[in-house]
Length: 273
Ligand code: 2HA
Ligand code: ZN
Image 1 (tube, rainbow, N blue to C red):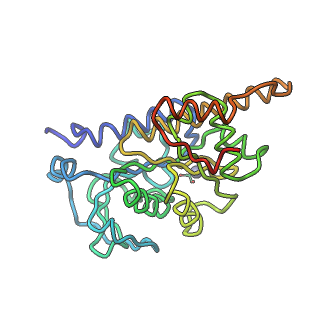
Image 2 (cartoon, helix red, strand yellow):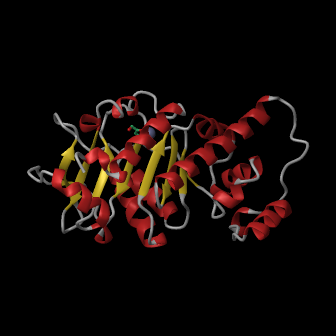
Image 3 (cartoon, rainbow, N blue to C red):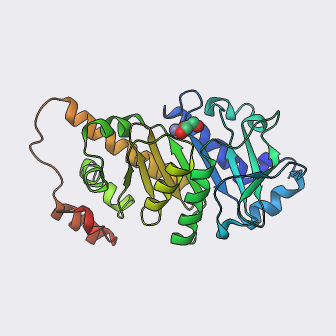
């Protein structure tokens, strides 16, 4: 490999950032992405690492993320610029053996730091790794239609999950566990990190009221696909609402159960009925 961009981890990460920007989810420095590298990714990329950076304590810790390596977007950086200048806008951090600090080993040049939401991402990685065994991606985006719905739907998991499941037939198959909702909170801190990771113990996505969406996935396709599916369902719901006409019909709970049965998934019954 001639340079680090030849690795699937780094090229896939950069591609996903560009795809999110193209969707209109990353105005200015909005949104952030992290990827927990596999042993193969690390083996491929480590020739390009420089571990001379300082350790920085995160204020949160996770036993199951000790000594892991994460690709991360930079704090205050614009998704729009990632493709053209990746080394300043994204980077790789190593986690220490206590699981409570990071240091930069590649990228984030000229004084850049990991995303301001790194504590949220880190805690979500920890709970999704435990819950699924395979999760590697945590993705936060400012999804406009999901945000719009947080002004008009009651802020709870049941209402949001049902509204999304009913808005597109694919939804119960893509996220049969449903989505959670975090009430409005100041972003970037330990409190919102804790609230989000509580949800992520059992659900693959959390909606942040009046802010955006957090999604998880085993790989870039799965995490991006989940964000895309949730946001598109929300768009359909908003379109239906914006006709100003009453809903005459929808996908009923029994229809949802029938989809789940045929596609071999188990729907979270707590969000039905
Ligand atoms: O990175 O999206 O939530 C900026 C944000 C903070
Ligand atoms: Zn945000």
